[in-house]
Image (cartoon, rainbow, N blue to C red; front, side, top):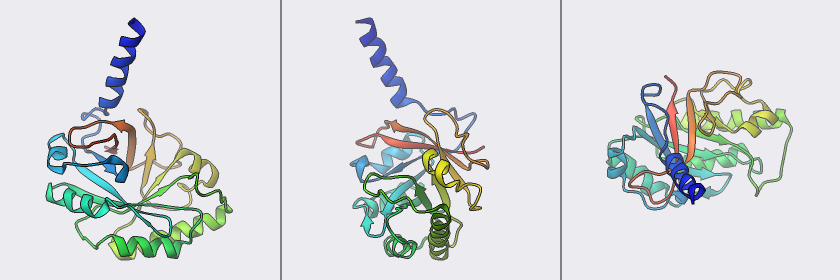
Amino acid sequence: MILAVASVFGWRFAVNWAPSRTDYAVQGIDVSQASGAIDWAMVKARDVDFAYARATEGAATRDPSFGQNWAGIESAGLRRGAIHVFSLCGTADDQAGTFVATVPRDPEALPAAIDLGFHEDCPARPSREVVLTEIRRLAATIETHSGKPTILRVTPAFEEQYQVSGAIPRPLWGTGFYRPPNYLSRPWAMWRSSTIRRIEGVESPVNWNVVAP
């Protein structure tokens, strides 16, 4: 019984936890179709400063919720940004084309993010030289479209294999469950601190992110 109660309290703490505002004044979320229904006005009332929405993945996949989220974030008065999930199984040109066709130009938008990680539906593992060339090409096209440098969200496994952070001079978005990232070769600009945060206004858990002080 005691263990069960402790487990419940532990879970409640985990899904409600966020880094201290004293240490990280600017905090926000990133969402996708998996986040479910979102009431953006309620989200803003929950001390969310900005929101990123997944827009595209690979060479042809568009997140079905992107258009609604993109408009909802703006209508709530939040800063907004778009995410592209990079695939090792698609060319940079094809992936960039899908992103550009999906995400409207918005000079007020946050820098677009490229999510770099491994995915079960893509077993390809090209050489580091090939991968870095493709990421640079993708970033350059997105930046021409958006007018701002991209930010690279790099998972620990992807960084270990391809050492992106030391090779491509773009702002970095690290990941670390409850602990700030320490695997990148340069200081990070953003930190995804939780993937299970629950907030009012969002049907499912969200990714919680903070901006470096």
